[in-house]
Image 1: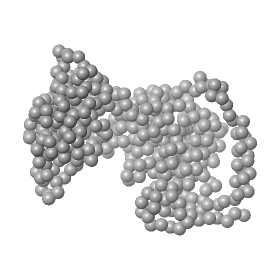
Image 2 (image 1 turned 90 degrees about the vertical axis):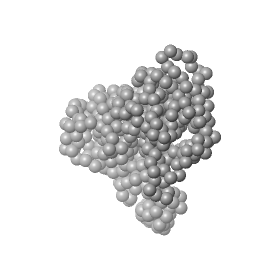
Image 3 (image 1 turned 180 degrees about the vertical axis):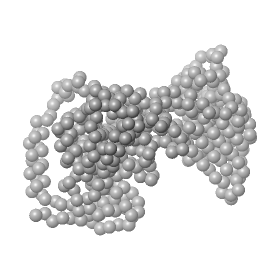
Image 4 (image 1 turned 90 degrees about the horizontal axis):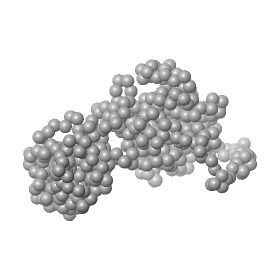
Length: 455
């Protein structure tokens, strides 16, 4: 009989060591090593491998011989989710959904199941009982005859039920609770996560069943487990949102069947998640006009432009080192903009606290709102309000130049729908537009011109 071997595995990156280490040499995390027992029976492994090879050695085809006409996407009926998935659920795909506790991951999966009434769905829960899931179904007004609930954590039992039931979609909540009996380590460990996910992927591809895996996240905001987990699955969706805001953002981090630039926006209500079909109007609905430190910009999220309010507050600092706080905006980008304003405009902010906020709880990574952020800071510093019907787009370079942005026409079309009359934009983008009586274009080449013309 094979002798058990003990090793220590980092729960963050999967690095293994024969002895316990306080700090992981791979990812530099502290106290992340957990003891795992590995049983290596070479004769058993060899016989098992031979059986797998014998059963799959004929599973090879020419690309012209593969028929995909029947494998159409399953449209969920939730437009924001379909947008992020790339048009619907692909048969045989494995989707990993991560997010903070209570953000709405399970609620989204339940509403997804309710929308697809023609498909057999198996909901596997390792954290809740069947009665608890039934209570959530009643709260959401759930009605689905082909919806099955299983409270189980053993992967072998789940695989047997999947083989018997033959559902089109399987939802596992959560992958951190699933374990394989042949492994000695506890559920949620690196070995269990990796091997369980690998087995699920094998079932999904062999039986053409779509799997949704709900995953926990760490305190840093990453999906718990080794990074290889995200590489193994087909799609990784991140459910984001502030607990103090009702809006939730579903973002695709990885998608083999669609774009990773698309986002879906939902509003959390007492009866579940509600789609936000016009996010620009929602984010600007509470905007106060005629107040300093506020500007409006347009960000491209995938193929959809979204108008957001960029708020800034500049106040005298009571500390030797002033505060710099950014919410929904890149902190390093804020530091660069402050440095450009001090160097090129002569606005000295070394004795002032600067707070920047993207209203609505949404996070924007696109550089096209740089100019709006800079103007909001100057507006608050000088206590002079920008025009309420002005849209600001443009990227700010280190020398103070205003660089052109992509998809400027789509951004402006969205602004026109909401009643904006003036567009402050990079001069490089103006050559693509014709003069209009309804709109006034204000082209700028540098940050100095932008401030002179608006504040």
